[in-house]
Structure formats: structure tokens, C-alpha cells
Amino acid sequence: DYLIKNQSNMVMFIERMADLLGAKASEFKVFQKIENQKNEIITILETIHEGMLAIDKKGYVTYCNSNSEILLKTTRVELVGSHISLFMPRTPALNVLDKGEGYTEQEEIFKHGQRSFHFIVTAKPIINNAETTGVVISFRDILEAHKLVYNMNQRNIKYTFHDIIGDSEAFVKSKNQALRVAKGNSTVMITGESGTGKELFARAIHFASLRQKGPFITVNCGAIPENLLETELFGYEKGAFTGAGEKGKQGKFQLADGGTIFLDEIGELPLHLQVKLLHVLQNKRFERVGGNNTITVDVRVIAATNRDLEEMISKKTFREDLYYRLSVIPLKIPPLRERINDIPVLMKHFLEKYNIFMSKNIIDFSNYVYGIFCNYDWPGNVRELENAVEYGVNMTYGDEILIEAVPPKVRSFYNPAKTIDDNLTLQDQVKKLERDILLKKLAEHGDSPEGKLAIANDLDISRATLYRKLAEYKLG
Image (cartoon, rainbow, N blue to C red):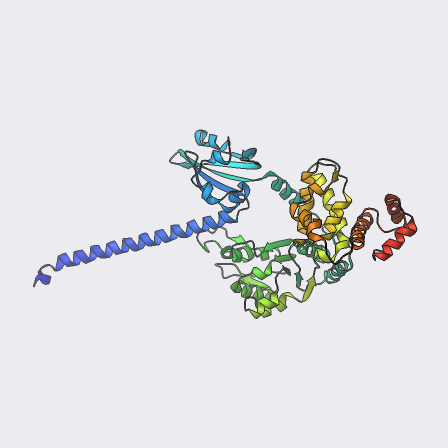
């Protein structure tokens, strides 16, 4: 009887509870949407190559990305919650809080502790209800900015195999093989340790091919977050996901139509994208993310990796069918330690590059530095060698790079206390250094008869003695 008498009240109660539950469900959906958008924004900020900071209206750091930690040589824990002036003393970004007017690409120099920083800085106000409530600061190292401009200019240059420096037997064999296959359309798999020059080979193949007038597009599969990689490769349609552009976006494969796409670090490609890539290789077509329209492309694929893909296949982390599709033409680049004769030539090349870059006029390296470089293992290969030369140019104020200007890691490797082999006699150690000096002179003068005469004069030895020593060390 009670339920019958209060039926209308019970119905009203149930309706209100339903409304409340519905509101809570809608609220949860909104919360989830906001959370997803926040995660997408954080992912984007972590992908940016610049340092990114946000400060509140009192100048305290409320957010920083990973690159800001690297550039400021500190940690997120130390940054967030600290005043910006601790890390960027007297930064004009603080004036943005008062004036509400930002600035772009301004050169700023800071000193924090024993370190000095030289950045290019952009600062923009955060406006809420017509009030400046904070500032977003983006910054990058000025030397890195100059290098970026240099590299962008270099990317517009037509690379040929003559631009790839190295005359050692193993390296020339790789160059000749690459040149032979350049004219075709078969996929190429370039393998080699990090820093051996895989992208240079890919570019040279493209510019020696019939596709040389088409685009050359690079994608580093290991540098792009997994959740963004599919859209980077294949593009997306408008409305495909939260935050997608109104017009959609072309992917790298579509941009490479008529040319070549270079997939670096292919071993980092997730399995679900390996399936899609295999489909593109087989059928020359794909669909954008969120789309149904089929896009047909004419693209040559060159892939590269420093990983053991066959081992990955055995562990089921790389598809065997994709491996064979990509490896129609396998091309292996030898590490620098297997092409010692090329080291002096590369040293000269990078010295010339960074002389121009830093407006210096350093003439050469000391013989001892040549000896150190020729005996170091170079686990980072040509890239590490270039960095070592760049370090030396930075640290040198005279006209010769001396032992003091060699990076500590490389210098310590050649420390006699650490590197002398008890099984080698003093005479053998002397021969080792003598060979290094001859390598340096060959790089400087060449191995023509005129070049060898110049070497003999430099070393104050007869041509007969020089020829004997070259034969002894199998240098010519």
C-alpha cells in the first residue's frame, strides 16, 4: 500500500537519480576527453626539439619538457616550482608578465653557476580574461640553431657518391654496390652501426637514380612517438581524432610520391605498422588514418637499421615477410674502425667545415692528435669523429689542434698508461705511431709521385726511405 500511495514520489526519485547518473556519465566523458587532449598536448611538447617552459604570473616554473632539462643541464624536479631567474637570470621573458607583449627569436646569454648558456628565445604571454597569467618560453642552443640552418641548406644540395668521403677498400666496395643499384626501383636495406653514414648513402642513391628530380623524404621511425607514427607515415583525414586538422594532413608516403622515402631505424617500427607498411610495399596504395579513400603512390623505399633484424625475427618482434620485402638489395656500411685510412681525410673535411662554421682559421692537427684519432675505436663512427673535431675547433685558439683540444674520452683512450700492450715492444709502439704519421701525410699530399715527394720533404727523409716505409706498412 505504501508503494502504491507514494508511486509518484518514487517515479520522481528514480527520474532524478537517472538524471544525476546521466550527468555524472557526461561529466566523466568530458573529463576523459580533456585528459586525452592533455596527453596529446604533452606528447607533442615532448616531441619538440626546443626547450619549453611555462611560468606563472609570479615567474615560477609550472611546466617543462624534457629538452629544457637537457639544455639547462638540470632536472624537472629542480625546474618546476623554482623561479625562472634561477636558471635564466634577467631574462626579458619576465617583462612579458608586466607588458603582456611577447617576443620572437631573441638572442640571450645566461650564466647559471659555473655554466654559460647562449640561447635563441621566444616568449609569448598566456592570456586569460584579458589578463596575463603566465608566459610560455621556448628556447634552443644558438650553436644548434646555426647547425640546423647549415643542415637545412645541405639538404637542398644534390648529394652524389663523390660527396661520401672514404677510399678504403671495404668502403669503396659499399659505394660501388650502391651506385650499381641506384638506377633501379628495388627496395634497399642499409645496415651499419650508428653514425656510419646510412642517410648519406640513401641520399646518394636517390640522386643517382631516375627519381632524382622527385622528392627525397626522411622518416626516423625511432624518433617519433608510436601514437603519432602512423599519421606521420600515412596522414589523416579531417576529424580522424581529437585535435586533427580541419583539412586533414598528407603523410610522408604521399609526400614522397614520384621520389624516394628513407625509413631510418626501421627496426623500431611497431608490429601493427609493419603490417601496413608491408601492404604499401606490395600494393603501392594505402588509406589515411580515419579515411576510406585509397591513395596510390609511386615511391621507392630505402630502409636503414643498426639492429640485427634477423635476431628480431627469431624473437617475433619484426616480421619476416617485411624483412624480405625491404631487403631486396642489402647494403652494409663498414664501421670506421675497419677503415682507418679514411680517418685523416675525414678529420681534414670536418676541420674545414667547422672552420667556416665558427669563422676560424685552424690549419691542421698535430701529429700526436692524428695518432690518437687513428688508434681510437670510434664506437660512434663518423658522427663521433665529427663531434670530436667540432670539440677541437671549439677548444682551439691557435692554428693547430693539439692534444689538449681532444675530447677527454678520446684522449684517455690513448693514455700510454692505459693503452700500452705488454706484448708489444718499444720498437712496435714506435712503428705504430710512425704509421699514423704516414697516414696523415698521405691524407695531406695524396699518393701521387708529386705527393710522395712532398711527404719525403716534410719528414726530411729520402724518397727511397719513404717508399720502403710505405711498403712496410702496406700503405702504397
